Image (cartoon, rainbow, N blue to C red; front, side, top):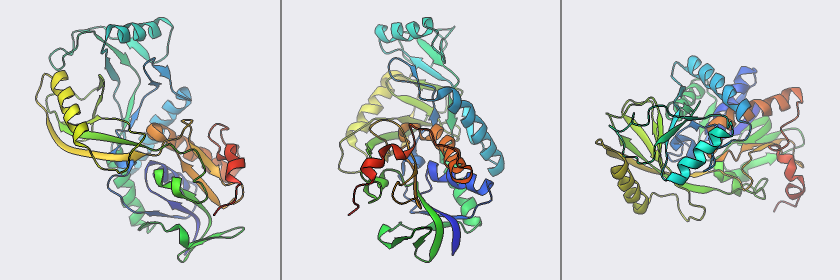
Length: 355
C-alpha cells in the first residue's frame, strides 16, 4: 500500500490531522489500537479561555477559541452529529478569598470573566455559600461522539488499521518510510503519552499525568452550563449524563481507577448537590502533558520523514485542530510553525544518538 502519510493514533490529534489531510486530498492510513481508556475518549472536551486560580487567559485564547468553534461545527455538519456546544462555566467560589480574586479579575478588565447577576439562581440545585461568577464563552467538544464517528468514517474509506503500532517494524529511508507493507512519504505520531517511549521522541520533556473521572446520571440538573466548585460537572451529549472530575497524579504506576478518588468525589457531590445523582461509571486515563505546557508539533531534526503532533495535555480539544492545520500548512505550503510549538526547539536534544 502506498500513501502520502501514515498516522499513528486516532485520538483527538490523529482525528483532526486525518480530517484536514482528507480536505487537502492527501492519502493516508491511520493505525490505532482502539484502547478504551485513551485520554481522548475520556476527556470532557472543555474549551475554556481561562485557567488557574487567578483565571488568567490560556495561551493563544483569542485565536484558538473562534477557530475551534468553526472547526468543530464544520466537522459535526459533515458527520451529521453535534460536535460542539457553548456551555459557559458557572464558577462557584469555594471561599471568600476566591470570590475576591475573581472579582479582582473583573475589575482588571480580564477577558472572559463576568459577575453573575442573580446569585441565588442555582440554590435549588447546589449548596454554595460565597456566590458564583461566569466564564464565557466556554465550549464543550463532544469527543465521546466525535472520535467514534470519525473512526467509522475512516473504516468506510479503508483508511484505518486497528492494531498496536510496533515501532520495531518501522524502516526509515531518506524520502520514505516503510511499515508492514505500507510505504508513505512521512509518518506522524499522534499516539498520546505512549510517544514518550518512542526512540525518536522519548527525549522530549513529556510529563504524562493520570486523571480519573466519574460519569453520573443527574436528570434534574439543567444542562445549559458547566458547573465548577473544586471539581467540574460537564454535560455530555446524552441528556442527563454528566462528566465529573478530574484529578491529576504526576506519579503513578498504573492506569487503573482508585477507590480513593471515587469515594472522595462522591462525597464532594453529596455535599454540593441538592438533587439526586447516580454514578454509572468510573474511568481513568493518562494525559499526554508536557513540562512546559506547550505541544510538540513538527518533524524530527535528523529524520524529516518522522513527524509528531502530540503533547496537548488538558487543552487537546482546543489545541489539536488548531495545530493540525498549522502542521499541514507547514507540510504543504512551507509555512512556519509557531515557535513555541515547533518541535525543532528541541533540536539539540533530539539530535543525540538514538539507541
